[in-house]
Image (cartoon, rainbow, N blue to C red; front, side, top):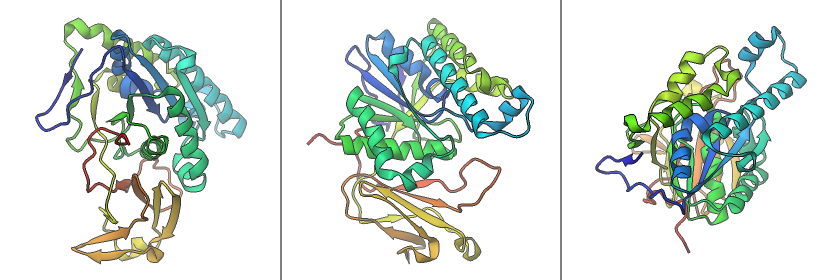
Length: 329
């Protein structure tokens, strides 16, 4: 199994017996969908792999309603579902060759990672940082910032801020589960016939996530069977202001908020109170003079049955940093 690269991509990290991999998974099954083959490859080369699981995926009401024949999901029911999914991720990890000691589960609320950044920034970043300091990975794989699931984008932000705070020189790769890459995801594992066993193991690991197959078996197994693609994390260092990619209309601005998350903490403004400047046909947000990455999210803060993120995140990106979370001092 080996990496293929596009002609302009930063060289892929070497995978050998010295590799210490940390996979950041917002929910149970993301460790398999995002990096199951990479985990197998690292272990086959004699390296080590750990999984940081941020939530137990307890906010998954439709499969639970179908399976348990109930309409209303109480807090106790959600907790039971989360325990079930925690067991499923352990079974999936066993299929991939990992044991219980390689799982670092934080048990945060499903669909609550943006709120963790917004309302518990310091404790949330510190919790991820502490896992990084224990594992001391040389390679960290995390969701892409552009992934449309709000927990995935927020997981990227949490992990990047925690890596910076930990002073980690780990190299960073991202994976996309929900949405399409922008073309930067050009590192893929080659899986010829000799490596078909790896695909079978990934599918077996996905089948351990039985709760996810109740209503979506064909889709989930198709996702687990596709080649894994990785890309470098978008750089986020330097720059006094961030050019925002959004151009909301006047009416939309009345209900929109901006969330800034950086090494100093988080701050939220209603759009009309944010310190924005309009120039060069775009909105610009001045950033605090804080070393390290800075991320901005546009959100409407409205209850909706549609879970995916319409606006997403932007990050400060006017200086190249390749795949390195933080340049060694």
